[in-house]
Length: 439
Image (cartoon, rainbow, N blue to C red; front, side, top):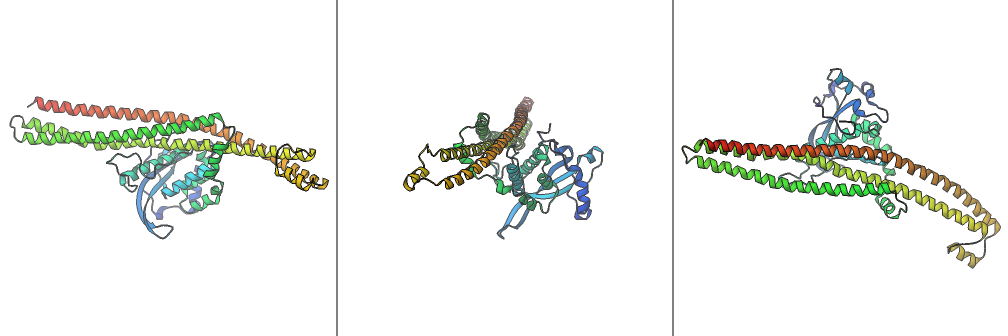
């Protein structure tokens, strides 16, 4: 696949012991190969994988005992693989919360980009035989695959892949959190109330972003419905397959009372038992395709986040322009001595008399300064808005191409899997037919 989609996972060796790790100076020299320029995919320089998950027990921030899962991230230079050498990969452990911190940093730092989503924290859209426990081994394994996919998505992104914080997330186990917080990204995060205010009060929304936000809502709705249908179908399918196990039991019992027909009935029963047991592997494979759909369920929210940020940028521009217009009107009123609109200033003038020339001159001077500052602010906000629109639309177009490609491939693969499943069912009944014919 191209940079927009992750390459196949490359298996890595187990985590190295402390005795064979390089010292910090050598490690930094060794890792210098990976720093990439903006616009170049990190995957061209580095292989990345989340090799395994491990359950651990320890004390949390409030000194309470808790059980949690950590994930082993392994990296190695691409040059080594191409040269035929197979060095021990650099490796470190990360918790899911650290992945969340990384993504939150990326969202705040790159508000104009569609930041890849993380896999779900707790299982959603599950059918009745699938555990919703976030410590269930099958769920942890699916999450491991999802976290690896997240890293590959970021590493293949033309802008995100060159971020220093992301690079240190992959290579520096100690001190990484402190480095993230030192960026001050939390102070830059927009409050939900501020974003909501912008949504309802912006006067001139960009039609393209409004349509894209609506598309994100619709995409999320459609994929949610698809996942619910798939969960119901999985429940029904599981029941149908397991009921076929009853054929096997009945044929086996029947064969015990027959002489000439016994062998044929027994063989047909074995085929039915195998058919009933095959549903577990089938539904496990289906979960893989469901997770691919879930990724774009969460991608839809990332797309809407870009649109909401644009609304906020537009709103700040409009507020700056409105404030500048108000200041200019005040200057005109003060200079001419006429008040066009009802205001507290007009009421106080009538009650307490007009201002002295010195007071009016001081206010005019202050207004001139404020107007100059306001004009600079409007110019700055306008440039920010234009740059945001330009950068965001380039990334949205990139995302649309990636989405169309990925979902098309996922749906085709799902259809092929269903066809294969039906063919296996036909084969089972053909085998049973041959058994019956030999009786």
